[in-house]
Image 1: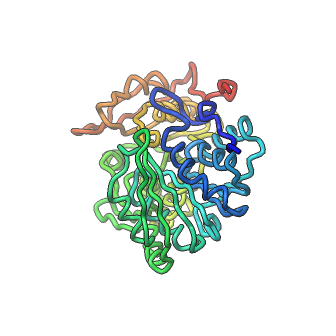
Image 2: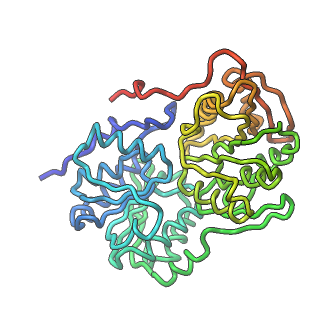
Image 3: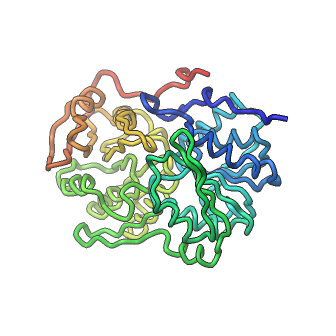
Length: 394
């Protein structure tokens, strides 16, 4: 009898941003499920694990193929919420648990569905975690779009698995199947995480997990914004919005001993990295790191100062929607006269958007690639706002 099929076209990205080129599922999700279908059907309850499912295609597709008591880890908070919403509307009887990125996620797993990350470091840490804790019989089905895959991904998997098979391509997608985990090699690899790097030029120790923005380095945009910190207005508190590894939060807390910093990011691994970075720099008592979508935990008009180095990717797709969402979040949370200090790739020309969404915007610094601006929130007029759930259509 044919297995029930998930209606991929009915999946939604909400509450993540939407737009041209941004989809909730693609051909790689379909190929992954097809390649893993037999393994899923044979798996005992609780032995199928899904990692980095974007919006629920893999989790709900596996449930339709017979997987029960699924264990799931999604790094972005918005991904977790999208999966929950899609499950409620499309597969209400799906049973899955969201778990952290740790041994509990993988212990006893015999089938793992993994959406290949863009970052080789993220893949290395994930592969090591699987090989260290999964069942010795585990098979890892790791898939992605061919344009985002490289031969080095095979090498990363082979560093902790005996065998990596490559499937035929279909609709510009491919799946790597890893088997034969080597727990000792994996344990050695895991011991290197999180990475720790000292940057004497900015007097900062950076601690990062795989896949966090800029990896174990400080990107040039952040460096340009750091160089302007002595010009920041006086404030009792500041916010590092989309904090990544927590560079801005830790540096600002070190530079201003009386300042309390709130750092937020939707990524679980970014939050873990930012907390570790704050601790490594002796400011954990003054840096509060929160996993959140933008500034959703903060009241309207409650903040004096927000710092932001906005991302311009949604997974593998270029999009300005993420930045504009964060600008609106800053506008909503800033009190009248409060300021958003933002660094951005100059070619993106965000200044008119900042002026419209936040308020009067002035240039603070500029180099060959990046621009730093300060936007003062209007004393009156329309604030930025969060999208309403009433905009979702199923």
